[in-house]
Image (cartoon, rainbow, N blue to C red; front, top):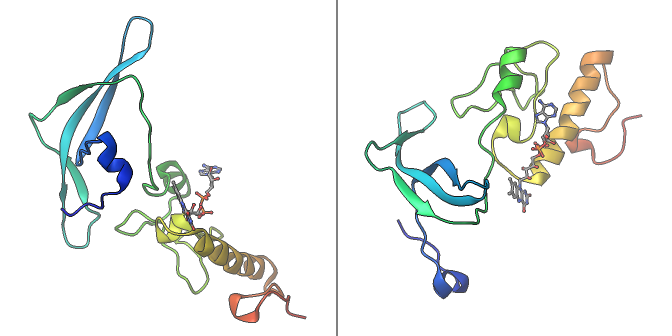
Length: 156
Ligand SMILES: Cc1cc2nc3c(=O)[nH]c(=O)nc-3n(C[C@H](O)[C@H](O)[C@H](O)COP(=O)(O)OP(=O)(O)OC[C@H]3O[C@@H](n4cnc5c(N)ncnc54)[C@H](O)[C@@H]3O)c2cc1C
């Protein structure tokens, strides 16, 4: 794997990849003293979300007293999906068409990261606005809210 290296990486940093944290270790006072990790590998299957599999026998302990978490979007919250009974795509995003942002459940709409996966704020705003038009239409039978193609002005 080719990694981008910038000046701060060259100061005194060693980078490790494909490891997953299993536990934070603490001393008697509850202060952090280490991490327990395991190595992981991606398993790819056509049409399915890639699976991160733990590699047996690769557990390791690291001493540390500070942990910074830098986590990205890891899929839609399962609780919402389960409670609404929503259909998901193989990337574990909520299935909803860009034609009207309707999900598989009547009266439930999805937009933004939850629908397209980890993305950009401009897409969240754009999809959010389009979805509002379709929700309004769903509730009232028609809407005079603007669609993207209309610019910012409401339809009169
Ligand atoms: C670390 C990081 C850096 C990023 N940097 C950039 C950047 O520089 N530029 C850029 O364009 N994009 C960036 N993004 C992506 C951008 O933030 C997202 O694409 C955008 O916020 C998605 O908007 P959203 O409305 O779809 O979802 P979100 O902003 O995630 O909003 C979803 C909301 O739903 C709430 N929620 C979740 N579950 C429930 C529930 N059960 N009940 C009630 N509320 C709930 C959440 O608390 C949250 O407020 C970044 C993302 C991350 C994680």
